[in-house]
Length: 242
Image 1 (cartoon, rainbow, N blue to C red):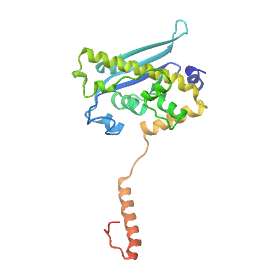
Image 2 (image 1 turned 180 degrees about the vertical axis):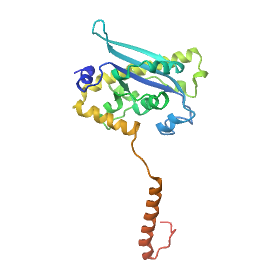
Image 3 (image 1 turned 120 degrees about the vertical axis):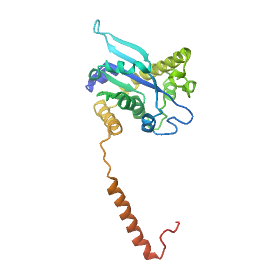
């Protein structure tokens, strides 16, 4: 089976859209310094645009067509307002990042979602899963240098730098599309694995856990008392540095 046949098998739309956001980062503000949710929800977060790779079946002749485009920051909301979310499978290299941005910044929760990183972990969980590594491993091409845009806001970029960002992003889109089409058909049991992958993502993207801080503080206090009710019998003094 090819990727579209696998999507059809599990009841997902066979038209799919690869999504890859670009965002501001510098030496102090980056995903190497903080969690994804801290980064995306920070006041310093700035979306620098997004690349899209659309694969769809033409209504005119039934042939599969592919297209790419980069949408600048000011035009993204309008673009998302016109996506047929119920008829499109969203594909991302790291959905914990890209789809979190969709959700938190643009108010979109895609009903059909596949994370390429989950596909690569299914193939080899102990391998590296960066796009740079996977592109070389599967002989698909070479990822560009995100360092070329370090410390630059959208308003800091001249036309040449914006063009370079666009080309960098669309190169990533092409690598991600190829990875998706290569790895999705390698699932051993898509009917089980794709829903499980989505459930795992939803635990992160749509958490349903409530936390009772008052009970937690009481539990800590009770555990502390219980600990010292035992330790006191040994003759140790509370506050001793173990």
